[in-house]
Image (tube, rainbow, N blue to C red; front, side, top):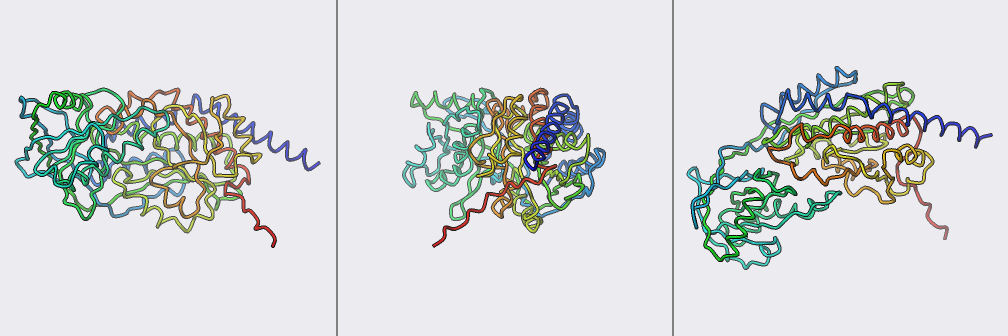
Length: 452
């Protein structure tokens, strides 16, 4: 009798998840959210007036959609503001280079700087250069980022941008340029944050477009002396970041929550529609759809993280919410654009739970599998919470196109494929329904110690 009752409950939960999934495929909420953010706010670099407008937008949007406990969590940030930027080839001929400063870069002198260029075809070649070999020179790394569907190409390339400036400075360079971490071929450069090492002089750093990097490669192949004049005017300052939070309270277990979100800040060249307007839209849309027919037993919390791009949010959010970790059923940040989910990655040891088997059945029509592997990463802004014990969930999106536009002026609303974004919403709506309306635990099973 008990088995029959459990089977009936599973069937009911599966039917609810399927219904939420199907509603999501045509629900307009997610697209309306990202369209509104892209059009009414636009770029929203943390620490600027635009970020304050995004904060107010986020509060108004969650309230309009019926979320409860909508509030803003302010926190101090190390902000960075872009100024005038230019790069010019001065030898072997005069020519313009498309350039964009990297986040946290120190500025050049007001009049700029000029130097002989040393081109490194790979980052490993730069690391192999002897100390002092770049004294007075501008180092340029032109290694090509690989296109992958899982973001691994970006992960492998990230050190070229993050630590390249300090490695170049260690060898005496006066400035550092890197081929944009991008998979498309364009003259639009792609920005992103970098990190100076504390024991090495700070030098100006920027990304050049893929096409200009290819030109420098060809000049280097001809053994032609190359000179570049670079001007970057930026400033570092302290400011306030704002994370926006809203809940859809659970009915019988409101203290238990699923935490889902995206980051509200963006880089400044485009409108941040993919990075990370899409993540916010998918989270809001999924929560809205999953609770539209009836409220769930557990609380759904949507978070718009305030300063992901400059690495400011994680510590502040963890400090504010670490006491809630025992009540968090699952946590994830959506931050890979809007293209299809390929697979779902659950905490180790939970894939074979009956509720997760129900989830797998509900996701199958969306051509999504449940991976046997746990998530590698569930978002920069939640990593502290995961380290503190919150169960991480990862929805692996197809990133084959994402890095064509990521961190560039081409990150705009027109890049969002509505059907693919709604597939994301449908997948998350099914997950929220099953986990939010059951007593399933996604914490790794406790294995009893063997008896002596």
